[in-house]
View 1 (tube, helix red, strand yellow):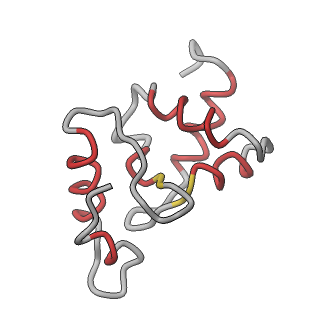
View 2 (cartoon, one colour):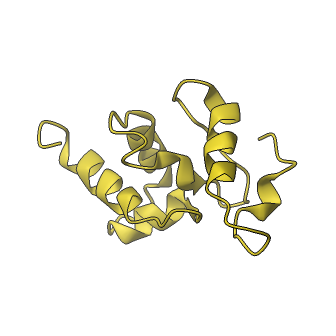
Length: 102
């Protein structure tokens, strides 16, 4: 990871802290790394994440609750499948994704 820009490293390390079965927003990561106005840049860093799924960028969604982007193979369909595979029953914070396409 050391060969990547410091900003990317911060983003990926914050992303790695998101528990399985949960999501966070791009803005959450921006605030977590001390740069609250950098939500778009966070998205850019996650789009360049070479460590997926170890660094679970699929767990990062838009502030309005929609999936946002996913540059990995399979795009948003794959992101949705990854998230739904982490659901642990009806009380999961991801249960609202079942009918979501974007």
